[in-house]
Amino acid sequence: MAVRRTKIILLTVLVFITTSLSFVGYWAYKYYGDLLPEMPDNNYYENMEQRANSAMKVIKRHNLNEDYCLFIDYSIPSGTPRLFVWSLKNKKVVASF
Image (cartoon, rainbow, N blue to C red; front, side, top):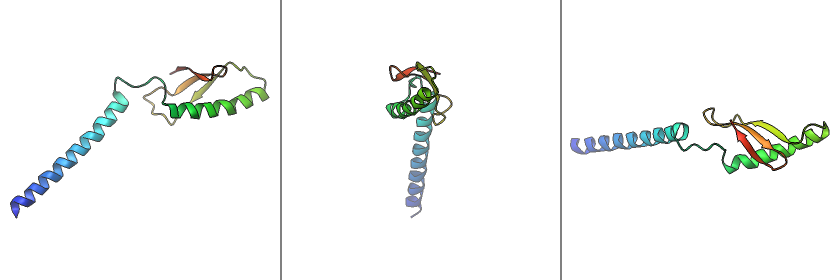
């Protein structure tokens, strides 16, 4: 009975350590990996296009420059680029910082 209890405890500890290392590895890759994208995923592009369309209405109403627009997306982690220069004519991200 004691041997079985010891095996269960060891298995539980092993599963806990493996799960913890998986989460830590994912977090480290996400925030400190060499392969971080300079541009956001396509989900953000749809979001920025919607913002650009609503910004274009304000720009036309107030007769402002219709070339570029700046967007800051605070939902993106601070370690990745979240300031975007959006070309209103080409409807794409020109630069990100």
